[in-house]
Image 1 (cartoon, rainbow, N blue to C red):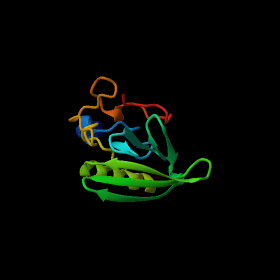
Image 2: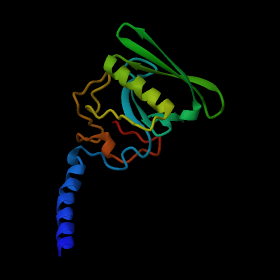
Image 3: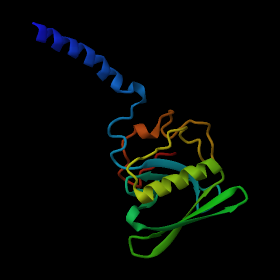
Length: 172
Protein backbone atom coordinates (compact mmCIF):
# COMPACT_ATOMS: atom_id res chain seq x y z
CA UNK A 1 0.00 0.00 0.00
CA UNK A 2 2.85 2.31 0.88
CA UNK A 3 4.57 1.67 -2.47
CA UNK A 4 1.31 2.36 -4.36
CA UNK A 5 0.95 5.68 -2.54
CA UNK A 6 4.57 6.54 -3.32
CA UNK A 7 4.10 5.65 -7.01
CA UNK A 8 0.94 7.77 -7.27
CA UNK A 9 2.67 10.68 -5.53
CA UNK A 10 5.58 10.55 -7.97
CA UNK A 11 3.23 10.38 -10.96
CA UNK A 12 1.31 13.40 -9.69
CA UNK A 13 4.49 15.40 -9.19
CA UNK A 14 5.94 14.49 -12.59
CA UNK A 15 2.85 15.38 -14.65
CA UNK A 16 2.98 19.20 -14.14
CA UNK A 17 6.65 19.17 -15.11
CA UNK A 18 5.80 17.65 -18.45
CA UNK A 19 3.23 20.39 -19.14
CA UNK A 20 5.77 23.09 -18.29
CA UNK A 21 8.46 21.52 -20.50
CA UNK A 22 6.96 22.84 -23.77
CA UNK A 23 6.71 26.52 -24.71
CA UNK A 24 3.23 26.32 -26.23
CA UNK A 25 2.69 29.15 -28.75
CA UNK A 26 6.43 29.91 -28.88
CA UNK A 27 7.30 26.40 -30.16
CA UNK A 28 8.15 25.98 -33.83
CA UNK A 29 6.61 23.01 -35.64
CA UNK A 30 8.94 20.03 -35.34
CA UNK A 31 9.50 19.99 -39.11
CA UNK A 32 10.30 23.72 -39.38
CA UNK A 33 14.08 23.22 -39.43
CA UNK A 34 14.31 19.76 -40.97
CA UNK A 35 15.13 21.10 -44.45
CA UNK A 36 18.10 23.19 -43.28
CA UNK A 37 18.35 26.99 -43.22
CA UNK A 38 15.33 28.81 -44.63
CA UNK A 39 14.86 32.50 -45.26
CA UNK A 40 13.69 34.88 -47.94
CA UNK A 41 14.89 38.35 -48.83
CA UNK A 42 13.17 40.99 -50.93
CA UNK A 43 15.86 42.51 -53.13
CA UNK A 44 16.44 44.11 -56.50
CA UNK A 45 17.91 41.75 -59.09
CA UNK A 46 20.65 43.07 -61.40
CA UNK A 47 19.26 46.63 -61.48
CA UNK A 48 17.50 49.06 -59.16
CA UNK A 49 13.69 48.69 -58.98
CA UNK A 50 13.77 45.18 -60.54
CA UNK A 51 12.07 43.55 -57.53
CA UNK A 52 12.70 39.91 -56.75
CA UNK A 53 12.56 37.54 -53.79
CA UNK A 54 15.69 35.55 -52.98
CA UNK A 55 15.11 32.35 -51.02
CA UNK A 56 17.43 30.07 -49.12
CA UNK A 57 16.07 26.65 -48.30
CA UNK A 58 18.18 23.63 -47.52
CA UNK A 59 20.97 23.43 -50.08
CA UNK A 60 19.21 25.70 -52.60
CA UNK A 61 19.42 29.45 -53.21
CA UNK A 62 17.12 30.86 -55.85
CA UNK A 63 15.17 33.79 -57.17
CA UNK A 64 11.50 32.87 -57.02
CA UNK A 65 9.94 32.18 -60.36
CA UNK A 66 13.28 32.23 -62.17
CA UNK A 67 15.95 29.76 -61.09
CA UNK A 68 18.74 29.07 -58.65
CA UNK A 69 21.75 27.08 -57.57
CA UNK A 70 22.71 24.40 -55.07
CA UNK A 71 25.37 25.12 -52.44
CA UNK A 72 27.93 23.00 -54.32
CA UNK A 73 27.68 25.43 -57.28
CA UNK A 74 28.57 28.45 -55.13
CA UNK A 75 32.06 29.85 -55.85
CA UNK A 76 32.30 33.17 -54.04
CA UNK A 77 30.79 36.43 -52.89
CA UNK A 78 31.74 40.10 -52.79
CA UNK A 79 29.85 43.31 -52.15
CA UNK A 80 30.26 47.01 -52.86
CA UNK A 81 28.46 50.11 -51.62
CA UNK A 82 27.49 53.08 -53.76
CA UNK A 83 25.64 55.70 -51.76
CA UNK A 84 22.73 54.00 -50.03
CA UNK A 85 22.71 50.92 -52.29
CA UNK A 86 24.71 47.77 -51.58
CA UNK A 87 25.65 45.55 -54.52
CA UNK A 88 26.03 41.84 -53.71
CA UNK A 89 27.77 39.72 -56.33
CA UNK A 90 27.39 35.94 -56.04
CA UNK A 91 29.74 33.90 -58.22
CA UNK A 92 28.64 30.38 -59.14
CA UNK A 93 29.13 27.58 -61.62
CA UNK A 94 26.13 27.06 -63.89
CA UNK A 95 24.71 23.63 -64.74
CA UNK A 96 26.66 23.79 -68.01
CA UNK A 97 29.94 24.33 -66.11
CA UNK A 98 30.30 28.01 -67.02
CA UNK A 99 31.32 30.48 -64.29
CA UNK A 100 28.63 33.15 -63.82
CA UNK A 101 27.77 35.99 -61.49
CA UNK A 102 24.45 37.25 -60.10
CA UNK A 103 23.78 40.70 -58.63
CA UNK A 104 21.42 41.41 -55.71
CA UNK A 105 20.94 45.02 -54.60
CA UNK A 106 19.65 46.36 -51.28
CA UNK A 107 19.03 49.96 -50.24
CA UNK A 108 18.08 49.01 -46.68
CA UNK A 109 21.13 48.29 -44.47
CA UNK A 110 19.18 45.96 -42.20
CA UNK A 111 17.94 43.91 -45.18
CA UNK A 112 21.52 43.80 -46.49
CA UNK A 113 22.78 42.45 -43.15
CA UNK A 114 20.03 39.81 -43.04
CA UNK A 115 20.91 38.72 -46.58
CA UNK A 116 24.64 38.42 -45.80
CA UNK A 117 23.99 36.40 -42.63
CA UNK A 118 21.61 34.09 -44.51
CA UNK A 119 24.09 33.66 -47.37
CA UNK A 120 26.91 32.65 -45.03
CA UNK A 121 24.65 30.32 -43.02
CA UNK A 122 23.53 28.74 -46.29
CA UNK A 123 27.09 28.48 -47.57
CA UNK A 124 28.26 26.79 -44.36
CA UNK A 125 25.00 24.82 -43.99
CA UNK A 126 24.99 25.46 -40.25
CA UNK A 127 22.50 23.18 -38.58
CA UNK A 128 21.08 25.99 -36.46
CA UNK A 129 18.87 27.97 -38.84
CA UNK A 130 17.83 31.45 -37.85
CA UNK A 131 14.95 32.33 -40.16
CA UNK A 132 13.94 35.94 -40.55
CA UNK A 133 10.59 35.79 -38.76
CA UNK A 134 10.50 39.54 -38.05
CA UNK A 135 7.98 41.16 -40.33
CA UNK A 136 7.52 39.34 -43.66
CA UNK A 137 8.03 41.56 -46.71
CA UNK A 138 9.16 44.57 -44.68
CA UNK A 139 12.88 43.99 -44.95
CA UNK A 140 13.65 45.13 -48.43
CA UNK A 141 13.59 48.24 -50.54
CA UNK A 142 9.86 47.93 -51.21
CA UNK A 143 8.86 48.18 -47.53
CA UNK A 144 5.20 47.22 -47.05
CA UNK A 145 5.13 47.64 -43.27
CA UNK A 146 5.06 44.04 -42.14
CA UNK A 147 2.42 42.45 -44.31
CA UNK A 148 3.25 39.61 -46.66
CA UNK A 149 0.52 40.06 -49.25
CA UNK A 150 1.81 37.27 -51.48
CA UNK A 151 -1.46 35.35 -51.34
CA UNK A 152 -3.80 38.27 -50.71
CA UNK A 153 -3.93 37.72 -46.95
CA UNK A 154 -1.23 38.45 -44.38
CA UNK A 155 0.51 35.17 -43.64
CA UNK A 156 3.88 34.05 -42.38
CA UNK A 157 5.64 32.42 -45.37
CA UNK A 158 7.22 29.84 -43.08
CA UNK A 159 3.79 28.41 -42.29
CA UNK A 160 3.62 27.27 -45.90
CA UNK A 161 5.15 23.95 -47.01
CA UNK A 162 8.75 24.05 -48.32
CA UNK A 163 9.08 25.05 -51.97
CA UNK A 164 10.35 22.20 -54.09
CA UNK A 165 10.09 23.89 -57.49
CA UNK A 166 12.20 27.01 -58.10
CA UNK A 167 9.83 28.19 -60.80
CA UNK A 168 7.08 28.57 -58.19
CA UNK A 169 6.53 32.26 -57.44
CA UNK A 170 5.08 33.30 -54.07
CA UNK A 171 4.92 37.02 -54.78
CA UNK A 172 2.47 38.65 -57.21
